[in-house]
Length: 107
Image 1 (cartoon, rainbow, N blue to C red):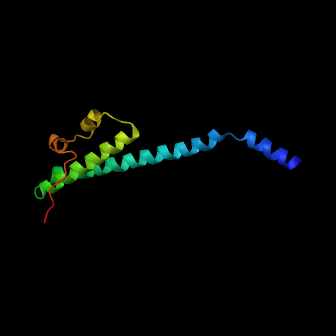
Image 2: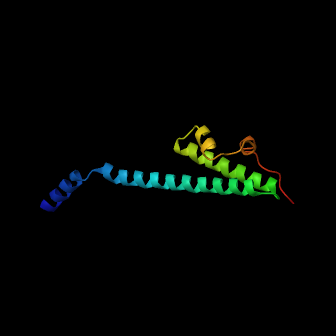
């Protein structure tokens, strides 16, 4: 019977919240990584748009899609205001105006 009693004592000693805090930490790390990846995509698309002389409409569509995706990810994590990010990343008005719009299919 002592084996069962030892097992019960061990179960009482283990804190269930310790296991969930590790998972919560892992989830938070994944969210941060995902936001970082989305932000990098925004910066890359904005740079391509700024340097473009040709294919500007296509690059504008790409930038809008990247920014829209980034904003959605931010909102999923709880960030509802985007004003500071718009200023910090210098997102042009022409990108903001068309957020969420699907471009026409190209032939």
